[in-house]
Amino acid sequence: MKRLIIADVKSYSYNGKSIGHYFSVAQNYLELYSEVIITKVAGGPLYFSHFNNSEVFALPYNSISGESQLKNKWKTLMNCKYLFRNSTPQDIIVLQHSGASTTFLGIALFAKKNMNNIFVIQYDTDSISNPIKKFIYKLAQNKIKGFICPNELIGKSYKRPYCIVTDYIYNQTERQIKFQSLIEKKYDFSIVGSIAPDKGVIEMAEYLSKSKYKTIIAGKANEELADKLTSIAQNSSNIELHLGFIDINDYNKYIKESRYCILNYRGVYSNRSSGVALDILFNGIPIIGHKCNALEFIEEENLGFLFNDIKDFNIQSIMDEQIYRKIQKNLLLYLEKQKSYKNTVIKFLNITQNNVC
Image (cartoon, rainbow, N blue to C red; front, top):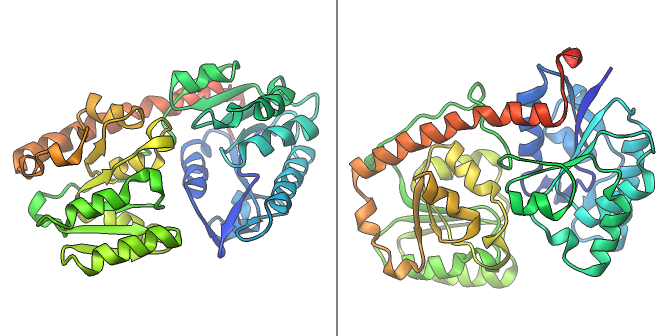
């Protein structure tokens, strides 16, 4: 029988934890499509920590933090080999955006000639950003039926059929939003998720540390960034800092307890889609962000506010209950629009009524 397999062939493990949105995307596919078609989550042993045994298509390896890149790339390739050899031509395989160039090489080397239902999720064009990566992609291109991506620019870049949807899709039956007023919130602002230089967290921390606004910053950072943030927090009574891996419960808790979440994207993050932005919106919280391609939909859908320079942004003006309630209404409209994305993917993957379990 035909199955839908959402696969993370890299299965990156950091101290036994999954970093990023791989579990979230896999869970999203289970919630959205398991009533339409048999849906399996393909991943390394790490995936048994989050999913039931019956839901997992077990791959042999995790890529391990601290091991050599070469060894982890070999593991990704072996997971590709196992996935393609133990699936059937009838299966629909959707490969998550993990180890993209290595995944393309795995498709080229191990995907069977009669497999014509391989799809790839792509959030950016980094995997075709230089001649070597382009060559690797060319080897796999004709074996890929299509791409699932967040915008037309990315879709057109890979020169295969594509469909445009958000990184993952709001599921009304699984996630119910309870809106709160401004005065019910614990924090004015939160900055959550992995902390990288191009996310502009240091700059925001320095600016907010000189203000009256209570801010929580939580996420994993390298030693240099962690030291800078620790120094700022130690000298600022309004900055609460939680460095290190954040489990999903605390992650959502910090978001929900905030009036607004801040995304100060720069560099590489300014042009790629943001799973964190969706996490924030799906929890019913508006976004304040740096004006860039990745966040332009926030302004278009009136889901928050964008700034060119936070120093020129009037923060006090958004601490108004009527303004806040208006954004919450816009959030409901945006989430309602998400309903159509489920059917967009079903049509693109050609999941027909004949495949219903």
